[in-house]
Length: 339
Image (tube, rainbow, N blue to C red):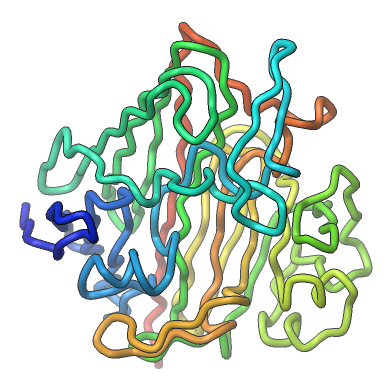
């Protein structure tokens, strides 16, 4: 149960890191943003996620990296929604839309550590009514837990008034070791449809069947080949930045990332997942002095369909009082012996 100082926030408070470990994985989490800082895969001898050595990297260099995102991941169009006849206006922080919770989302909060054992760590955040314009007091816990070669991230939420909730983890994955890159990576996503982007990057209600398109990832494809294709949807975002409508229900395998003999499987009970190829990533100094550049990693952001709070045709992200909502996303690793 190692833990230590992770640096000082801009407001003078101290952040800490907490470690959990078994014979397959060693994971480091920070109470700042409930952030996944490190995911060391022992069989492969590499860190599967990008990160920083100190908390100031998350505050000043790359916002959202590895953090828990809330109250609502992705974009809410025009920073506005109507719930039970009342219009709620939010802070617009992305081309006229509300992105990842607003001006100061859950990624920028200092969470409270509730439990820390050798293989689990649980953090809690209480978001007051009116926080970033959202109704109801929302209590959130997130538990990082190890079981063999699997890291699971389980969220539990409850509210005092009806409110939209769509949490995700924003880890950037690369299986290339010390020098992050997507070269040689194969991606697979079990989804028949994606959401189309509008010119401002907000996901439209209209979906596109992936059959016969560059977005068809039902069979593994090389990520670099996808990024080299010409498609109007890729050009809007500078790469993949799209919501995949996942097949199946319940906790199930939804995606995989493969590099050489190392496979990472993504499992989730969420209905959708945003795949983002780090199109806007730009950090001069990451962990161990590594420079992070566009297209050097990929995010698997499990979520509800973006802007679903304004679209009754989509699975609802509204949480009502008296209910504790629980969701889980997991990352599982398998290293083949190389001849």
